[in-house]
Length: 594
Image 1 (cartoon, helix red, strand yellow):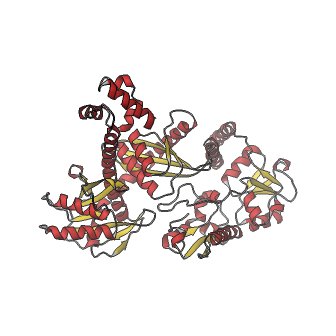
Image 2: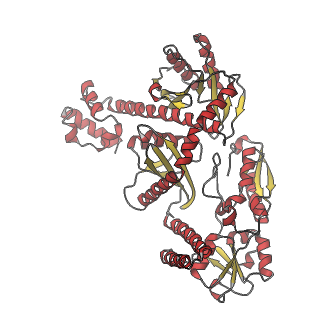
Image 3: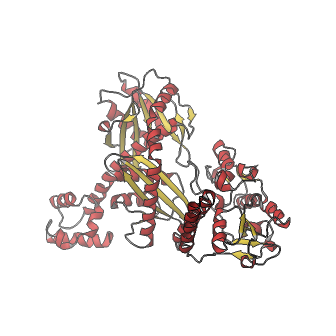
């Protein structure tokens, strides 16, 4: 996990790690690798004891799960005490906190479980009623399904502590991670490596456990029924993990979305080398084109994380084209097969997440009025009704556009949104783009905003302030900027005096500003997408022998997107334009689009 800058810009790098021997081995390994790659870099370990290390007498599933081992590490990243954190990937929760990413992972050690015993050589040799120790709910489910006659007893603590309990006779056998034992030099304690107890056939086991749960409930043994229910839940996760393994050596994302009553949930499954290792959800309200909201979120998401090599999602072609142009990954749109099944699973997960969390989302949205008031107080304004926020959109400074969205009393006023084709051609930069849109907007409208938010840092704030001062408007406009870090994540405000004000990512003010930022970004990028598509089509039709201006205009009216031409045939084109021009156009389509 990380929130830090690139190592090439750092002189000192602090690594957060737990104090257990295995955690220290892993952190020391990363430290040595970094020092060999960056000899000038000073690497320090920031050690800590987590809540999971302190509470050893209660099963993890009852006190918060694997997240108890990383909370303190995550807080160290947020506080700036550490630049990165090193932790066993198997114990990192699937859903990462906002602002943190899985930045990298090391070469995989053996992924198997280790059977450790002083008296028996393998799991099958254990006598009926033998006591097996493990803290993992997944391992408990697997063992219980494979050998229902065994007693499963919770086992907590670091590797050395668990081995000591086995040696003291508290257990007949224990199950540990093979990789952990190898890394701390205890390979000789492994009696058997357990790869897969079920041979990918879990359905009969799940059905049997469901029967046992029903029998326990009917016998009023509700505690036992709850245990079976936990087993079933964990086995279903194992089954899903087996189903979704993909034969890919590159990282891929599977994306699905579900909409209901003006709300949409977008869900992303992240696969690293064929394994599902993370899941991200996002809920938003939308009005009009749902694809605008989805595209806006994906653009901002991939600007703030490490993009995969491949993305699987079903979106309109113009959305696919923009994503592939802006990011260095390929986008696929499956219609059947395993990847379509994975998209369907993502859609179902999105539906479940939306139905579970929509009331929380609505409640948070209603609290924007409180955030609006907090912003007014921060800026020292007596009144604050209207807020304008500006965002420029372009790729490599070509075909620049700008979008302006308007909020009144904390609510978006979509009828006041405006978009601008920017005309600046000589001095192409965000600085001059910002100046142009401000001149064009505020020399024409009568109702001026109280606050102008620019999606940028000190440079953009300075540009806006300078040009507003030159315009000599009838009332002053307070200008602030949304400052991003080197991960393209908003981290604070540039205030009117050009000082920096950090934002708490858990605060309502941060969420309120993020909502406005998402809205203007969506609005601007949708406008850019439409303009870029028309521009590309116009350029594509230039220079085709026999294709005059009127024929060109006919094609652009019928096929407004360049990629729509990819699927037309010559007989269809000949109904619109002369045969010679149609033939030449088809030659170019075959050469450049197919």
